[in-house]
Image 1: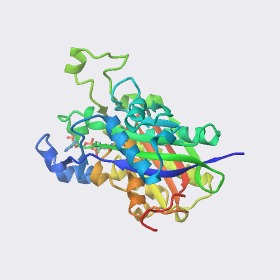
Image 2: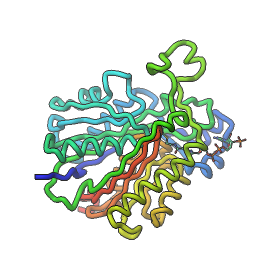
Image 3: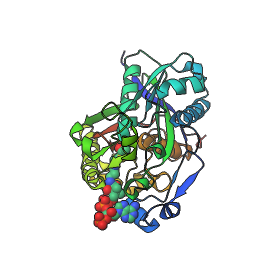
Length: 335
Ligand code: ACO
């Protein structure tokens, strides 16, 4: 019998250290006013010690505590990230060991800011096929490890965080992951990338001297396609499921720029009061933005059982997509 994948647990981790716009004013030629008005960001979190797997493991441990299950019950761990601890072993293996998930296998998935959506859809396949019963999907990025803090075009945008989601099967076909639309278009590769360190440009003193180990973004080019891509895909998933703006309780957009988020909400006929926004406090944490929003809103009792939720993202690749969910996880504050 067909199964549905539903979200049965959610948690997040953010490092304590705050990097504010005022701190950045001392590092590059920028201003708090410019950053807030162009991006909506006031501050972001920075992981000083440790790596992506440390944040991911903390988010998974919090998830297990929320759900009240042991790590040995996890079947699969998928980590969406563009900042793995190393090329190999996979960050998923490091998380598996750190949380003691002795019966799990896992792998990393690279789709930049759309990583969480790609990983959720991948994880749901394992549940829907009946192959596995507990799949942990993590979005985690230590963006501070690939950002050049001398480049004002990019260093103001990014932060570090992790979010973890547990997927389990349900026979109730009216809840869980209802629909998904995913895309990629590699012709956008020149607008957002990290050139060095891979097989194309193996690291040498020269690649380092040229800053090829840092993220590069043509902000203006990405901005234009991100607005259209995220709005189009969100509209598409609503239209093909017969939903009007008034039927959607929450839009959970990837947090890259408040202006991109507002344009997407407008296209969906959604009031901003129905849009999860925490970019002001965390900046763009790449694969972590969506679970970080879901986890905060759920913990605060604002994301409730029975609500209709649209997740949307756009990122490097280009990659973009949208997922329609019927939220079925009872609220921790409500009871
Ligand atoms: N402080 C002050 N001035 C700045 C700063 C800064 N931090 N950064 C750029 N400027 C200057 C520029 O040099 C430029 O000056 P000029 O006109 O003299 O050349 C001016 O401000 C305007 O720059 P723009 O790049 O046009 O600024 P824009 O309004 O486009 O905002 C931004 C830049 C915020 C990066 C925006 O383009 C954006 O959000 N892009 C999309 C990001 C995104 O969605 N990324 C995808 C996900 S990320 C991922 O997948 C990893």
